[in-house]
Length: 111
Length: 115
Image (cartoon, chains in turn brown, purple):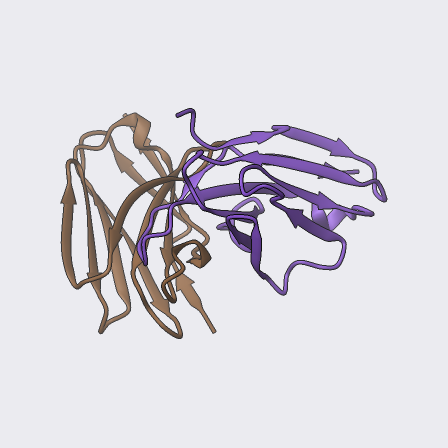
């Protein structure tokens, strides 16, 4: 079966750095997505990792270790608008849309 | 390109009634997905289409649920004889199949409340 774990909630201060972890146990692995979802809105794509290592994209970076079944999303220079839920999604085969999503980590950024 | 559009945004219905939701994907996308999301949880896969063909349905999808994508463009999701447990956000997403790693473009969802 598929099991994805993320912390339920995190709080950080504006301007700081926060790391959101995701661990997974799945049958078959073909990459991992991170999506951002503001309350009442659609999830939007942040990053995709299929090989081990760090992918950097502006203030956001994502890391993957396939051998450890572990990923993290790193957010730098936090802004108030970064308050949202962050979803980790594992792709099991070549069908990226049939990903299994974690329950999301709700990040609250405080002044 | 206006993105993925879903209608209605909100639907309140009484138990036992039928409801239908519509999704208009990004025009050049050949894959369309339906998900269900409840508060505090991630989206759960329900079904997907490649062009007009429905290729897979989740075991979560009971016989009361049916989806169509008649011309390979927009899709509808119908729930018959709604139950209170059907209350959720129903999300549609689309992508263009390239062979793996395609990011999904989500619509804003239809929030269903069954009274």
